Amino acid sequence: MQGLFISFEGIDGAGKSTHIDAVRVAFEASGAPVTLTREPGGTPLAERLRTMVLNDSMDAMTEALLVFAARRDHLQQVILPALAQGHVVLCDRFSDASFAYQGGGRGFDWGILETLEKWVQSTEAQAAPGVRASLVKPDLTIWFDLPPAVAAQRLSHARVPDKFESQPQVFFENVAQGYARRAAADATRFARVHADQTQDAVRANVLAVLRQRGYIPE
Image (cartoon, rainbow, N blue to C red; front, side, top):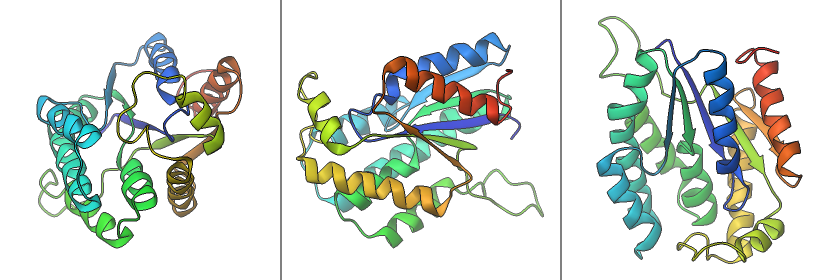
């Protein structure tokens, strides 16, 4: 795969979606083809599963299985083909969100999530004979870290919330801890951006990360 895979993560209210378009513009200005997508979602099947996950009542295992099923279809239909064509793939959430929300927020077994990650994100089916399969992960994950109390205040003024956005603050504290655990385990992949700043300051920090890593020109 010759493309570049960047994911954007953070608890609800962190404002990550606001800044994805600025990143798209920066890459397109440098001449790079960009595929902009999201999780859960990104394909017709995955979008239907997204609607179920965000709105229907279910236990944590069912949530995890549906999210990873959506991810598998998303990888096969969108992400891997785009990377093979040399695109920059910008994804609003990826597998770290499953560990943060189902693992941290719901308290679901971390080891089972790791097993699902290996099953779903393996390149075994795409690997050439004699080439060892690897795990598809973003080259860079931009983590919009926001205090849960601030996120709760922001969400109180938002649209009609889905079932995750309407969770109590303690849920988001656990989600934030899930993100912190993932970041600690894969520190070179994560770039932490403090989201409790003005939009201009956050955007400047995000673009600075991309420049420091050599992904866009100075």
